[in-house]
Length: 171
Image (cartoon, rainbow, N blue to C red; front, side, top):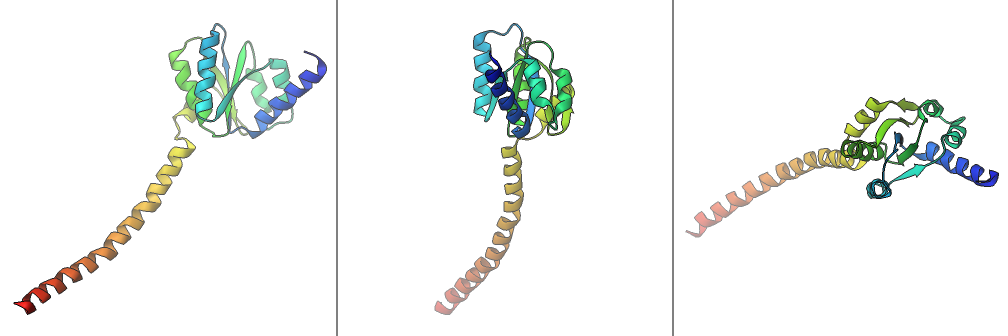
């Protein structure tokens, strides 16, 4: 890899560290190509990506970034899993690590916060953006349906009273 290619990789990694909601760092030594492709596919399903890069280039890319302290966990054969959704990559990595003992989570970063293994697990346990939006919509929608039901109930009561009066008048 020549200097220009290295500069391009450092720039790409810098964008990843700046724009991602969460970055998870893990060891992947001993994983097969098929296992790595499976991990990449699972990350794509949630809108995330997986990137293997040299630790020295990643450390250079981290210089001056909010998550610069994450450089301490970049040792050995590491892979970066990242997503814009602050929870998605952590969820996928945590689930994948449970089924594959060769994939070991080291930690990660969420904004300025550097995460250890337990921090990544806590983030993975949080609801995703879509789950939170669904909860908010249901909370907003419930009072509206209750109001509509309350407004509609008197009208149906009045209609039944009028129909009873009409029946008595006809008799």
